[in-house]
Length: 286
Image 1: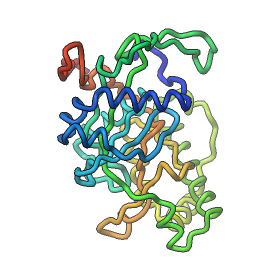
Image 2: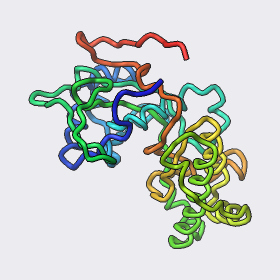
Image 3: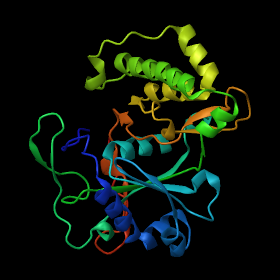
Image 4: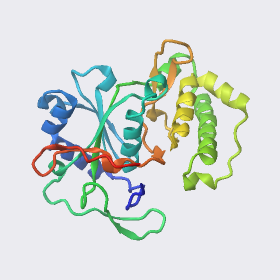
């Protein structure tokens, strides 16, 4: 299934991130219904931070495995999150965040004065009129995921120096990029000639930053035609205390710019349509 609009939408600025939270709060009652909390819990959510495409909030009163919602305007992130959440083997990957639910905010998120979404294509510079879900406005998705501790305080407590951690994550990044280049169908990676780090370099990097589960998760994603290449920003990584030594360590906390060859966006549930109802688009034959 090919999407009919630009895959990588432009970043949002500071004002845009503020508007994303405002749009989400306009749908607070419907979000609360979806995640099983009182509406007040959504309004009182603690803002954990904002990035290039959206903001992350902690919902009090939920168990850790589903206590965080990320409101994002990144279509690729929502697409990959949906695919991860529906994979039956997901429970076997301790290096990857648990994703509980993915849904798109409908007309409840359309604020007064909003204009149709028009943007410049990143590669061509041409003006593009958005034609995806939520047309004509920039869409918003909600990703409900587990709460995961920050990675850097744990690494620092173990005596890992910041420069060494940065170098080790760079080795793992090169490994992940090379894996994407040779084993996935993404054109923007396929034509890059990147030398695969020697296995002993990857092993040393994993040992230094406790990255065994992280690398296993990267392998798991690539096997499913997905590429996650954000580990150079340590804020995107978390820390999990697993049952074994290999399961304890770095975790992909924010899937961010993950790209997937399996496009399922048009099948994501929509919350807050014309009458404020939840609508599940019909499944399409693959």
